[in-house]
Each structure stands twice: as C-alpha cells, then as structure tokens.
Image (cartoon, rainbow, N blue to C red; front, side, top):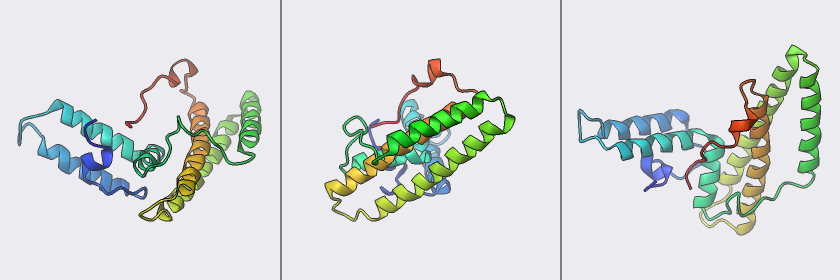
Length: 178
C-alpha cells in the first residue's frame, strides 16, 4: 500500500473516527477514480477498499495508529496486563464448558459478554489515544500496546464463538496493512 489508510482516505490520524466519515471519505475518493470520471486504476481502487476495511475495524485502526505514532507492533511487544492471561484462560474454559452443555442460550450469553468486553476495550483505547498528546512517551505507547494485546484475546474469543468459525482456516486470513 503506497499510502497508509488514513492518508489514502484523507482522514486525520485519530482513533475516534466516525464510521460515516470513513464511508464518506471512501466514496469521495473512489468517485474520483470511477471509470466514468477518470481512467480507472485497479490498484488505487484496491488500496481504497483496503483502507476502508482497515479503518472500519476499531482494532485494526488502533493497531495501525499506534504504529504510526511510534509505538511497538504486536510482533515486537506481546505484553499483557498483570493477571490477564490467567483470567482469560479461566474465562475460555468456562465458555467452552458452557458451550459443551449444548444449552442454546450459552453461546449468546458468552457472545454478549465478549462484545461488552470489546466495547470496554474500545473505550479504554480511545481514552489512551486521547491522552497521548503530540509527543507520546514510550510508556504511554506501551500501555496502548498492552491494552491492544489483551483486546486481541477478546476478538479471538468472539471469532471462536461464531458458529461458522472454522479453526482450520481462521488463522490464515490476511492481516491489515502495516
């Protein structure tokens, strides 16, 4: 990708982007390369589609924004909040046991729980980005990375709670751009 997704859509480097603003920016940019108005550029259209997809995902947007602000990538820093790993392992065991009971409401209950957790992470990361300022400290960037790493565990749980989840293929999809 020649431009990062924020640049590709002409959007500010912010976590708290409105989905409607992302869509408006996408439509404006894609209209400019529409074959009726200009010579169509398939690579540019693909870049715009990928930019919209990345920015529409709060987790992918946060990860990209953190790296653009000078923070560590998930490959470089795998830190988690204290006690989180034990807590998430216990949560997953409880969820798996509940799903094994074949109670039709259990999947919905655990999905609701995970979505609530995701919403909490979105709020927390938003506040962390708001507090960064123009010259973020390494400690502040690391705190965002640690929070994002924990958030990813919740995303994986949500993926696995989806009845269509196929563990044989789920880990082989492409990741957002760097």
